[in-house]
Image (cartoon, rainbow, N blue to C red; front, side):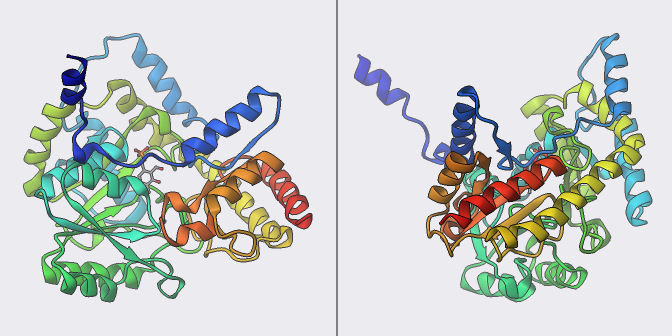
Length: 391
Ligand SMILES: Cc1ncc(COP(=O)(O)O)c(C=O)c1O
């Protein structure tokens, strides 16, 4: 009887996706803190700052009224505000009818993959890259095709790399992010345009994750909205607007997909949390506050670019955008998981091992998130310098 029940409870093969190893680092950091240690958290990719104060005020006011379901595609005034954002920030006109509000960009991936791909379809993703791309695709029965990237292409998928993979076995889609996680690198405008043109020529569907837009330091990130009305754009209030826990994002999709995604989202979740939608609309008025937060990241970036090489970590990827620095630790270890674990235990600085993002070369890298305070950055550099100096 027990045996039969156990057999019934066997999880599906497609649900067998790997966990995020950073969770182990977080659990170890929590144990150190419970024992009275003071950990500098540079492992989780989220801003330390709260949402803009105008967003918080709007949410507080909304709590007084009923919070009902909204239209499945999002509150119309928020969709219109997001469309206006494209005019203001990039000078491109977007029809609000193509804007869809989602439960974070994470919700956007599920909708985009369901709307664009059939089970078995092959979708190119960059390695190193954000692991849930691969894992969500797998859970939906699609195949993530890892495209190994190198310094020569600023860790971006190029048209040549895409076409080479497509020749080996046909691709149905490609997903890019610029600025990227974990590398913090950005695609140049030319690379983006050439990649998009190659994908369009070959009938490969193009998805652009623009979650780190607004957090660009090396040069201005451009939106794929400009390239074609057929590109699927995924974005979020999590990073620039410091709203990770509000779980709200958006997509800009080709007009023929709007009704499809409306039906999908309506069935999967009815609508996106109403309180978060109210706060998100107001957040656009908090840009001044968010620019101050961004200047803080710029200062943190400067402290790390200057300090980490002196501390012993000389080699890092170009620190173009987002709030990540991907550092090469191969001088000290060929097992970044073990390196991150020992660094945490011995210096109380938490970072994420690269193997989370790249099962092969990631063993030589760790990712630092620099979304904390400048004082923490200085202290982290000093602790790491003392530790590596003693090696
Ligand atoms: C590249 C990238 N895309 C998407 C996400 C998901 O973010 P959210 O669901 O909070 O919008 C993250 C989170 O860290 C990320 O780094």
